[in-house]
Image (cartoon, rainbow, N blue to C red; front, top):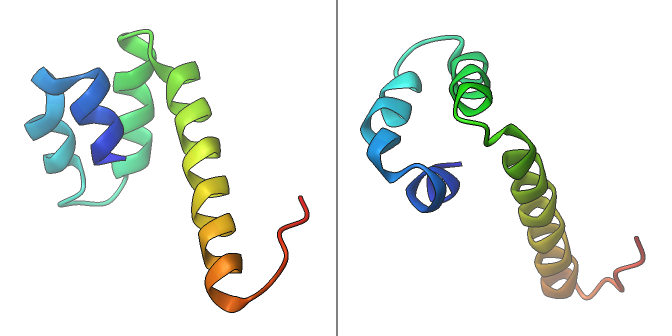
Length: 67
């Protein structure tokens, strides 16, 4: 998430990092991304990053990736 913010909203990086010091961080993050017109990009990034992490984990475990 912070990698996405650093890339897409570098001016908001400190604000977003601060969100995660208290409850409700993801809600505030989504509100900010929506206000900046970046919510769809976030979902794409999140899906891509999750897929990459799962493929890497499978490779490390010797498991064939079959989505």
